[in-house]
Image 1 (tube, helix red, strand yellow):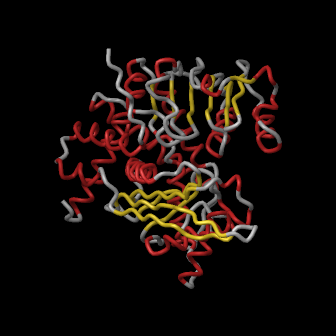
Image 2 (tube, helix red, strand yellow):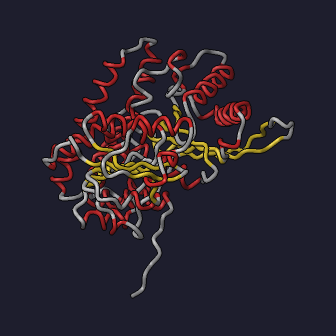
Image 3 (cartoon, one colour):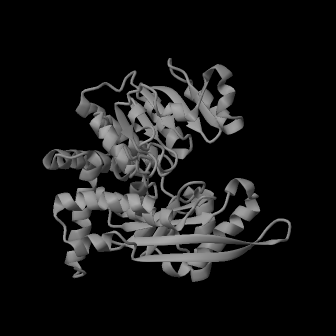
Length: 417
């Protein structure tokens, strides 16, 4: 038997996902070709003075996929493995993510090739300001609105917003979301990605007729999304049995003490939970649990390990953690996958709320934000679930069907096609 190597390039993966859903919809070839390419990609290099006085040149990218529904929107990540194809793919996923939850945005994404963990605070600030200065001509509150992503945070967004405001000589909070509250951030934004993911899990468990209380959960990745999802699910009565980060993984079939895990994450390492609790990080994905949350990077589950996954539900808090071949294997096993463009859309939804508040200069309470978020996530989950039944397909393809319909309708209304 000839075994073909699986293509894990995220740009190729998203194009395949588009083709799968487009075939179900019977979209014209020229529309598919438009959607398979970003409309604009900017590649930049910029010098930064390091603490030792040396000058280092950094490379970065900003991709804007499609703005038929509105200005593009999407995060900026700082990571040593950032590539052009990855940024293009992420901008495309953002288009479909915004469309599936009905936001008036297209997809954008940015990245700087760097390891932020090796940079001082001063160097990190100069890289942040340098990148925004380099892409400032193509972003703006009515053009393209960045946000935090992998290894970026609210402070970095604050520096970026300040740089853009200085260039334009006017206070412009609407150019960036995920900012500190004091300069136009939204209440509820920090928890939004995880909260939205948890809401979709709640709805999926209802559909499966399974109780959340005592449901077992494994979470790969203990950054913002994974950490807050663990806390919210624990509050709902779930048993968090395993978590991991870049240093390793821990497992306790009786349930981890999440408060202790959070303390260790902040002050020591997860592995200080105890040697008897340590497991291989790859084994976490294969634990027999009710709910598995991949909340790290792309391609965590591929054709190599998908047949060993035993979860009942997988909720993709990360972008692109399951490859197309793994998707097929998981579907055959009867595992319900809540796709990334739905499961982690809570972040961009509350980013949208932040942008709206910035434009109005009027701000909502956290309760208002969380209520509006829940309304959108519940409505969107049920729309995807019903589309999956109608088209006799999986939730991912159903989510793409909804997104492609909306983007195509907007392109036709604007006379593009």
